[in-house]
Length: 215
Image (tube, rainbow, N blue to C red; front, side, top):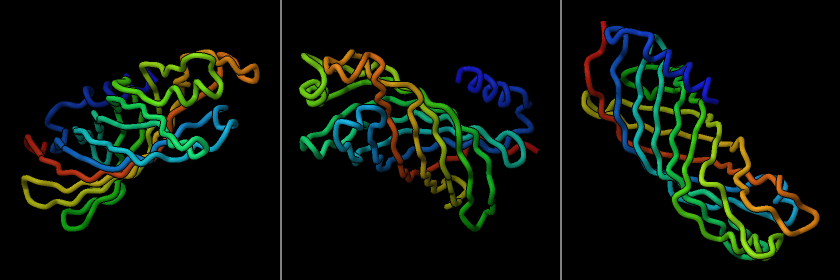
């Protein structure tokens, strides 16, 4: 993943400023439908937890239809446990670097872009580990402080005025590393029991172009 991030950063820095389009700074808020995947699913149903996602992003056109997008978000993840009527809550500050490939671009109609790239998230709050501890862990359960994932999705935007753009994104995030930190007591599990974050998010926001379009 670090090599992929390096390639993206190098791609942006490789072009002189005159070749870049108009960068945009955006603020956004939306809904995140989060759940957990992995061997922990075998013990009972874990369902999507409707949560909050909000943050800022910077979009930097590179050349033609290709660009680069940096995101910083506060994201609530976890899952809802219908079997025990409880929620597993894990909140993160998440950063992602996405390639932005524009498929449709027009000043008067909404654009359409493909977004894809890696993410890293830092845990700021967690609750509900006790629900898992009572099932498979003798005394406690902990999540790791960092999570890594891959984000893919679609984005659209429409120019509202020269100083404002309306933006929307539909993204899917899949964890690529287990967030389980504690070895379970249940003999049917082991220290490598995989628990991963995943979920869909829908965000709407306002973008504010700055700088000048290169010629």
